[in-house]
Length: 167
Image (tube, rainbow, N blue to C red; front, side, top):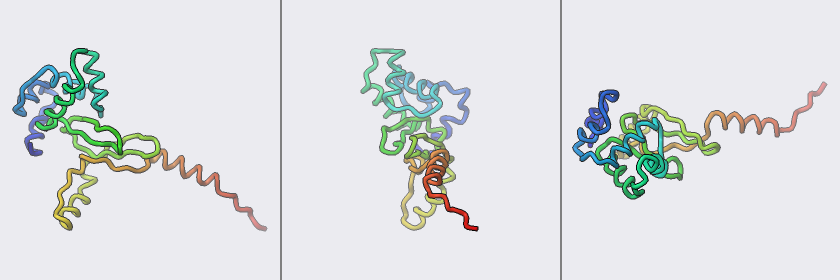
C-alpha cells in the first residue's frame, strides 16, 4: 500500500470507525483485528505485542498471542499500523497515520517523537549519493535526551577540581 492510500484511510480520523478503516483497506473485519486496532487507537501511543495482548486479554481471555501477532501483521500489511524497533528492544506498534521519527535516550530509555521532515535531508542525501531510499520512520535514532545530557554535564562539572584564584 502506498502512502497516498494510507493517507486516505485516515483523512477523516474522527468520523471513521475501526471497522471502516479495515474495510477501506480491503481486509476482512475480524473480532481480533477490531480489538487490536481499538487497543492501539485508545492507547494513543506505542504498544508492544505483549502490551496489546494484555489489553485484549482483559476483554477476551480466549484470544491467543499468536492471534494478536497475525492481526498486527495484517493491520501492518494493509497500512493501518506501523511497527518500529526502539533501540535493541521489542517492536512497538502505532497508527500509521502519524509517521514520525523515534528518538530513544540510551540513558533513561525515554522516547521522543520527531516529525519526519527532520530526517528529510538524510533521505535526500542517501538517495542522491547512493540511490538508496529509506523509510526513516521505521527505525529509531539513539542518543541522549536533554534531561540526561544536563544531568551528566552537571555531574562532570562537579567532579572537576576547582581552580584556585591567584592573587
